[in-house]
Image 1 (cartoon, one colour):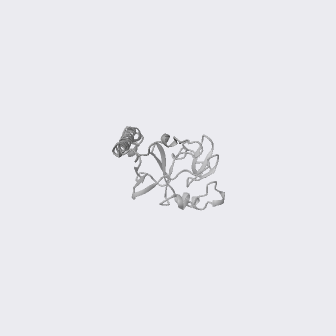
Image 2: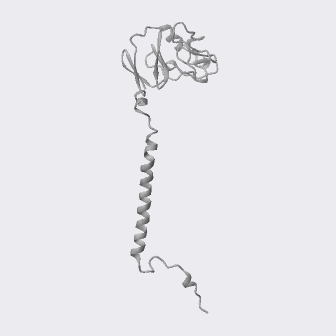
Image 3: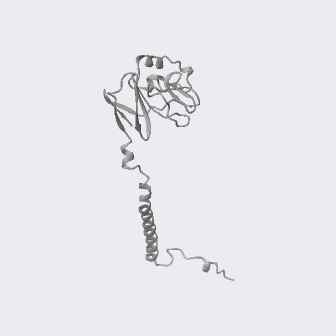
Length: 190
């Protein structure tokens, strides 16, 4: 009895003698797949591109602030990336108070020298690190808390003259944004 199992075996690609037909099929599959991938990428690009920031948003990525009208002991606020930034020209007493602070008493220990580029200028994002409130203390009539910096009236967080949290529920210091002094009277934030 002869086995017919050889008849049931599929023919290999080289056994038919029609190599051109198989080469064309492979090429068509590759070309179709490539065309589909390029088409999908071209269709997806507008959706991906729309997630980039707008020109108006990019314009706010950095701002310049004029420091010339700010007197010693005063502070101003500017808007940067839809957040207030406090720029305070500190007095010599405020600088000394900030530098004399014992790091062991701070919840988020950070020396004053690491938070400023020029000792007289403190620049911090004016958003409480607890729940995003805006602390008081930039205007002379506003309370500055127990350490002479800022006071968040919403939940009772106190910040010192270096923007470091000293009391209340805030978990960390006021954020120091990236900045550089362009000249003696101009600072670029961002």
